[in-house]
Length: 148
Length: 148
DNA sequence: TATTGTTATACTCTATAACTATA
DNA sequence: TATAGTTATAGAGTATAACAATA
Image (cartoon, rainbow over all chains, first blue to last red; front, side, top):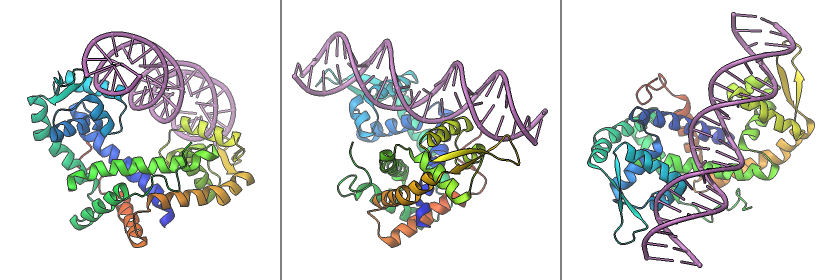
């Protein structure tokens, strides 16, 4: 039983990805775009590298992500006056409106779909277990992941 | 708190993938190869399409997966006498030995690394929650995933 | 006609290297 | 000399279309 946990993790993630990508697709977005929009909304205007590093995205990939969001009028590239090498990527009012009125509810709904088989108590428990799996780690790759 | 579950799922999966890919990498394999080897070991010789469909892999991709495993001497392509269009992909004795004596323990160890933050009871609970998330689903995409 | 396996091909995603402008 | 952003390019990974052999 415990040996099948790895297959279950894979399948659960496939399901998760399918649900979330399908949810943002009608907006012409990928889940990555939603993550970036949310990061700007909650943390304020940031440089592309900040956005990239925070979410494990390459900085060259972030260029095209921001390109796409700018093309849709959801974010705006403004120079950071304190360091003119950096942008301060900010949400436009359209971006903020779309995120708060449409995208956020859609994503909440998608999460609800994903968690549908679980009761509220179980969802909270699942969240706590995930949090510990992600954050309560000793030395990284202590046993399974040898560096090359 | 519940709204961050989606980010946690993503991060947990990234961690999972990193640990498992690193674990099989010294054998010159990808986690996909391990999954296929395990499927043959537990279910017996199968056609490439069976292997592909069962694990959501494209049949053309399965060709190169089996190519690689055959090149390593871990599996063998034999024709299915009942339907000569199909192969019966079987483990070689080397493949079975590697899987049972080396790969399986390595993957158990990798899973242990992934689950390290959890107690045995919590691991069992996590497994059960995952199982229900994957298997206890009503109509697929009932709310978050509209068909195109 | 449909299915299995195969090949060639195209497409997406991401990473690398090299450039500019700023620090 | 190092960093932020950009571009061009190359490399995975995967999917699509067309084909031969078999059902």
